Amino acid sequence: MGDFLLKKIIIIAGPSGAGKTTISDYLSEKYGIPRVLTHTTRPMRTGEKQNVSYHFETDETFAQLHFFEHIRYGSYQYGSSREALNLAWKKHDLVSLIVDIKGVYTYIKQLGDKVYFLYVTTSTKEELKERLLKRGDDPEKIKERLSGSELNLLPEDLKQYAHVIVNDDLAKTKQALDALMARFQAKKYRLL
Ligand SMILES: Nc1ncnc2c1ncn2[C@@H]1O[C@H](COP(=O)(O)OP(=O)(O)OP(=O)(O)O)[C@@H](O)[C@H]1O
Ligand SMILES: Nc1nc2c(ncn2[C@@H]2O[C@H](COP(=O)(O)O)[C@@H](O)[C@H]2O)c(=O)[nH]1
Image (cartoon, rainbow, N blue to C red; front, side):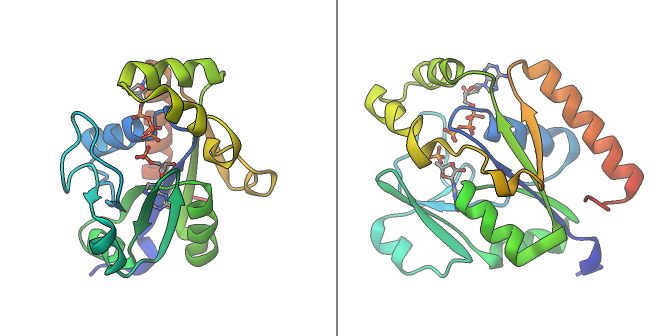
């Protein structure tokens, strides 16, 4: 299984539309850092694929699974498993995972300094709204996602752990990620 001490996880969180999936895809494509897939009961969006974007579940199949942590977000359930993480760590020292803010608390509490927390956001809420409209999200759902706890703002007590990326300009974000990866390699995964 390799040296467990080397195993690290980049936990990505932030508002809907901020670019968490885009960033995770970039890390995967450019640096071979796989995303640990999570499970959800929400319907697939255009372009998403079963067992590539998520493990898409029904309420019945979701209820049968054993989760490390799980949440209800909007009308749907989401959950991540320790088994999937361990499986990914068998092949890779560094992996990524996308969760909401509640999930971030769980991962930091349970995995401590194995976690590198990337908080992704934009300068304005309008930018998020525009991206979600362009993606074809329902305007009512967008309203819900961009208010209250669904907005996934960075709480005060998580700021000490967060490495913030303001993803307004994708080219600049990629430069910031490249710099981050260079630091990782230099430090040989001593992330925090
Ligand atoms: N810097 C950027 N500038 C413009 N559009 C972007 C940028 N980053 C991502 N996008 C686009 O915004 C949309 C949302 O991005 P993405 O799916 O990565 O967000 P997300 O944070 O994973 O959202 P969600 O939590 O809703 O799944 C996508 O269409 C993506 O191509
Ligand atoms: N705590 C968890 N949060 C998760 C998980 N999988 C996804 N998410 C978060 O849910 C919302 C909505 O996701 P979307 O794909 O419908 O836009 C978003 O904040 C994700 O980060 C999980 O297993 N656990």
